[in-house]
Amino acid sequence: MTARFLRGTAAATLAGALALTAAACTNPGSTAGGTGGPKDSAVVGIAYEPETLSPLLGYGKDGNSKIFDGLLAFGADMKLKPALASGLPRISDNGLTYTYTLRNGVTFSDGAPFTAKDVVFTYRTILDPKTNNASRTELDALESVEAIGDDTVVFRLKYPYAPFAERTVHAIAPEHIAAKQDVNTGAFTTRPIGTGPYVLTGWSKGEKLTFKANPSYWNGAPQVKKFTMAIIKDDDVRATRLRAGDLDGAILPPNLAAGFKDDKAKKTWTATTYDYRTVTLPTHHPVSGDTAVRRALDLAVDRQAMVDKILEGAGKPAYGPVPTDSPWFTKGTERRHDLAGARKILDEAGWKPGPDGIRVRNGVRAAFPLWYLSGDKLRQDHALAYVSDAKKAGIDITAQAGTWEVIEPRMKTDAVLAGGGSPGDPDFDQYLLLKSDLAGDGFNNMAWYDNATVDRALDAGRRTNDPAERRAAYDTVQRELAKNPGYTFLTHIDHLYVVNDAWDGPSTQIEPHDHGLASGPWWNVESWKPKKAGATGATQK
Image 1 (cartoon, rainbow, N blue to C red):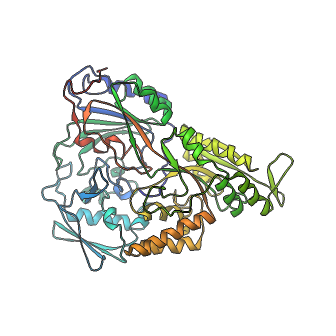
Image 2: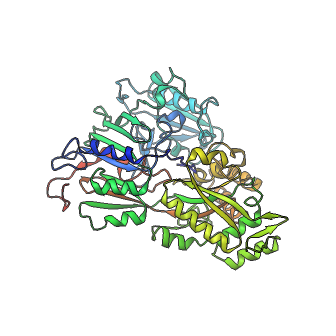
Image 3: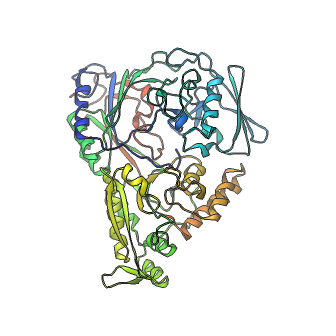
């Protein structure tokens, strides 16, 4: 994943969540609520749903899509391994040519053969300006893609783009179906066909996605025959449904996950992540766009207190999109909590305290709204803590909850408690987040950040394979963010999942912001096997 921002779902109702109870209990012994026998089904609770299921519009671009495969995939250790390709690519021409040989005998779930033309179709369609894919710039380096026979694909790049192979985990769409429809609105966007381990059987928007095992999957039919992702926006409702036995697993914030620590039938999984929470500081607002205000907020915020109190230790302070334990993090760009320093910056910039303690400059009051997603307790808690810290420096921020339909039209001028983050290459995290010409492009560069030095460094970092040059470029980006932070980065959060201890095989990867859908202990659900009777102390419900 990239530095992209998930919209989440429009309000998922309690009634919708309760409707899952029937689905979870109709097959005793095979789903949550069962009374024994093999666990051949699983129902998990997640917080967000995708806007589309089409790879041509961005679904599955980071792997783990379940319906589709990429040429490559990430293993548990986040190292690349072959998927639809029979091996890793052959790289030649000084890093400008990548050649993939495809796996033999793979079919789409409708029985049609997978060939090189499907790969060519997928990438060419994504690059077509008429395709509504907000992540197209992730493939900016790609000049051409061509098929040589049915089993070979050759990518040619405009410049040496170091992480290109990681981009080829992107899900592959079937040309024989998707090419016959409108790429942006056709039925394929909600009723896709792929080569993956599962076949979509239903999508009730705002409620659930249901899947069945693909019996002809090239890597073997999954033993979990039915898989349901329940879309439950509200954290408390997810925890309640999990406790009631309606779910086999769920992503939960730390305080709710802690409530299951004594449940011997369940196991808590902690995934380290690149997932950050940040406050956008829109350039087009007279207060949040002021460099002095931005720098003051960067010092006024108590990040460690957020980690300790909100995350209960399940995370770490964030100073930018790159986590502090990443080899790409620039040491020395950490910002200390310094309320006195924040006040000094504001004083020197002419922001003077008014009668009520809120600062004013040239008749402009240091105040602005901060939106967060309704029902997201972690965002709410981060927003309220940020408001409190800012108030101590004399900045009046008003936290407001809303859906993305309410928030998105306001993003040019109003601050947002946002999330993002992607493991892997630093280009993934920073380009979409900070590049000035992407401002206003959906959820890219939500703060409308505009810094010519950062723009040049971002281009330099993605246009060379030289490690030293790339290091220098991303060091520049991080140092510039310390000088003029268009965002106040708050925390990198660990993801916590509580799952029934009924299978062998669950594990976690280093996760992006896109949590609970392509990530979670079920990232590899196709390889799960039911635990044998007596293999665990868990009791059946």
